Structure formats: C-alpha cells, structure tokens
Image: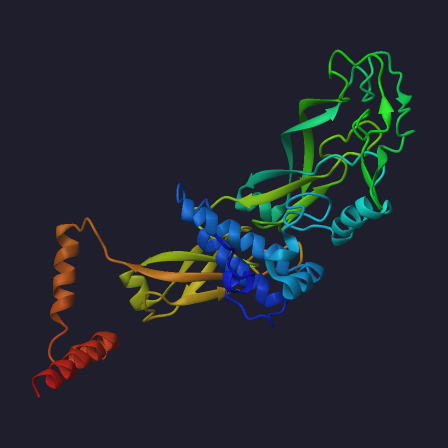
Length: 374
C-alpha cells in the first residue's frame, strides 16, 4: 500500500512552519499514542505514521529532499547509517552506484556498528523533574576473550588478496567493478585461529547495563543520543550509538499538552452557587483556587506557570483547571428534605432568572416546535 503524504498525515499545509508542525505532531501523538489505545493496532500504525512524518518534516534537509522527490527520496537505506530512521545519505547512495561502476568513491574499511533504539517509560513527575535511570540494553559488544580481534591468539594479518583495502577490482568489458573481497569478506584482515568465544566475529551478544541521565522537561517522543553505546563494530570499526526514546505514561490527574497541563476539579453544587476556595493539586504541591459564585460546570481557570518547563522552553507553561459540578449522591433524609424545599422555590417565571442556560434551552425547544407545526 502506498504511503500517505506526510503533510496530509499531520494535517498541515506544505508551507507550515516549525511551531505548526510541532503542534500538529503533538495532537496526533496524543490521539494515537499506544498507551491511550491499548491493543488498538490501527492506532499504533497511525502513531508510527505521525512520528515518521514529523521526523522527516522537522528536519530542514530531509524536508527539502521530501518536497523535491517525495517518498522516493528515502527508499534506500531505510533505518540505516547515521542519519536516523528512514533517511539515507544521498552521497552514500550515489557513491555506491557510481563507485562500483567506475572504480572510485567506494567506502573502504569496515562499517561502524549499528545504531540501536531503546524505549524508556517514565512517570509524568519523572519526565518533568528529570531523573537518572538504570537500563538494560540487549546489544552486541566487543568479545572480551579476544578483545574484539576475532583471533584466539590476538594475531590478525593483512589480507593478501585485497592488501587490507577490503575491496577488489574486477574487469567487466570496458567497466571496472569493485566488490567486497571474497577472501576476507571486506574486512581487509585475516585470522589464522578464530576465537572460540565469538568464532572469529570479534563480537558477542550481551545485555549492557547503563545509567541514563534524563533532563528535566522531556516529553513522549523525545530522544537522547548516547554516542558509542550502540552495537560494537567489526574489528577496527567504531561502535554505533544508542538512542533512548522517552515515553511518558498517562497520569491519573494531569494531561500534558506541550508545556501546559490540564486537570478536572470536582466541586459541589453549593460551592458552585455560593463560591468557595478549593485546593487543587499541582506538580509542586497543592495551591488555592478561588471559585466565584454562580460558576457553571465546564468553566476553566488558568494558573500561570504551574505547568511544565520543557527542555526547549525558558518559562514553564500553565495549568488549566476545568470545574466539574457534581450531583450529590447518597443523600440523607435531612439533605433530601432541604433540596426539596430549595427546589420548591423555583416557580413560574422567577425560575428563569436562576437558570439562564435552562431558560435559553426551553425557549429554543418551544421555538423549534412552533416552526414544526406552522
């Protein structure tokens, strides 16, 4: 199935700026995040699609390539190299093609180790304050027995076929082709006695334990690069990198939207009618919120700078408290009697003064039926 246009995936115009792209990605990620849609494969696919679109469009160089060539710009080298998921180094592509034909520009020596990814789940409080986490990452490391040489005795010789270049040239009519050396497999080195632990590969599978320092203010989708902590490369090659991707768990009280937080504050009907001061939670402890008299359910109050100070912001966001008026339950006989007496005071036209939304609704219903019968 063909891929959807990245701009269409995020729901933005092709002229969208950085902030607009970021907001669109946040909306999309919050809607389809796997933690909010457990077991929903379609939501998981949509989340990955949004993430892929944002990774390309948020990078100026990759966006230019996409605008010029569409998805075809990334069809080579998916997930490989150093440019990140889905992005191929254009120089590598053309170097491999033309180098093999004309005998120049070919990559010499062993390639660096592969980059690896790790998803780290955090509570909202940990993501906001920053934390240090111990993680266990399955990876490939240099063999300790042979110190990464691949040789039991540690002796490595230069390949006599390619003379250490890892490439050999072959004549095909008028063309000179280059290919990996068949004798050393492209490493440029040969081993007489392979290591009994790694069988000559110089690398073994292992679970690496690392301490990762997470900066304050990270959010779902943020990635932290640990240079050199990826898979070990072949003998003589540097290791890859480890990318730790943050995923923030849903919070029982707060919902994060960028630097802002949202929560619901339940109050009694008497508090809403008469006004009151209630205590509401924040990430720094409880604060007082003044509820004015005659407050309606759904009213939103803004507490400035009680949100999140993200890794990219100088100032914290705000906390938005949405008031929800609760209907009383489990009434005692005395409470029920008081409510019945209270309700009895709402009679005739006088009741309209006290319930403006209800009066407006009833007027609308009456007008609707009058149009229906006329």
